[in-house]
Amino acid sequence: MKRNHTFTEIEIRLFDTPGKLTVRGRSTKAVVAALLRGAAAHGPWLRQVARWVEGLAEDGWRYREYTGDVLVFRSTRALDPTDAEAYLQRRFGRDALSRVSIREQADGEGRSAPPRLPKADDELTKELRRLIGPEQHQAELYLGHPTEELSELLLDMSFLAQEALEDSEVAGLIEKLREAHVEDAQYRDLHSRYLTLMERAGPGDPASEEAYWDLFSYTSRKLSKLVPALRSFLERRGFSDLCEHEATAFLTAALSQALSIIEEREE
Image (cartoon, rainbow, N blue to C red):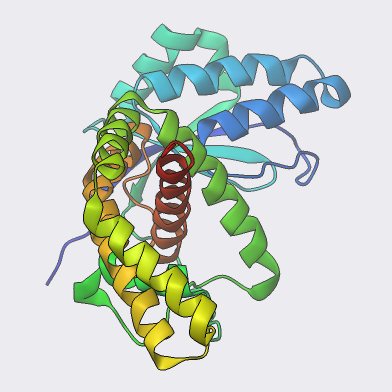
C-alpha cells in the first residue's frame, strides 16, 4: 500500500470573514500584487503579509491556495510543527504567530477530482499535449476545470509562462534555438512548401493538410528542447505539483510564446 507523505503547512489568516480579497493566479507574485492592491481598502496589515509572502517564497515555501480568508503555504523540506514555529518567530517575529497557524497535512488530503470537460478543440494544445506527455496521452485532453473557470486558468498559466520566458536559463535556451532557427534550411523548406500548397490548393486540400502537420511536427520537436528547462523553472518557483491540466496549459502557453519570439526575431 502506498503511504502518504506528511507535510507541514502554515495558514496566514487575513480576515475573520471570507471573501474580501480576490487573488487570481497561482504565483507568489500574483498573491503579493493582490495583497498590495487590497491594502488600500482593508488596511496596511496586508502590506506586512505581502512581505511575509515574499520571504516565504525566498525560503522555498510553496504557495498552495487562498481560501477566501487564509493563505496556505507548504514547506518543501522536512519540517515538523515545532521547527516551523521557531522558523516563523525567527523570520517574522513573535507577533506572526497570532495570525499564523501550523498544521501537518498528508499529501493529497482534501483534494477532489475536478469535473470532466468536453474534448479540447485547440490543435496546438492537443499536439503539444502529445509531445509533452506521450506516455499519458489520451484521445481526450482532460483539462479538469469547469468551463467558466477555463479562461481564467489559461490566463493565469499564460502570465506564469511569461515569467518563465524571462528566466535566465529559459531565455538563454530560447536564444540558442533562435540562432539555430535562422540557419535552419529544413524549416524554411517545410514552411515554403506549406505556404505554396495553401496558396494553390487551399486549407482543405489533403496535400496542404499534410504539409501543415509536417511543419508543425518538425517545429514541435525543436520546441521540445525547452520542456526540461520549463519544468526546472516550475521546480524553482515551487510549482512542481501542478496537476496535469495546469501543467499542460502552462507548457502550451510557454512553448507558443517561445515560438513567437523565435520567429519574430528571424529577420
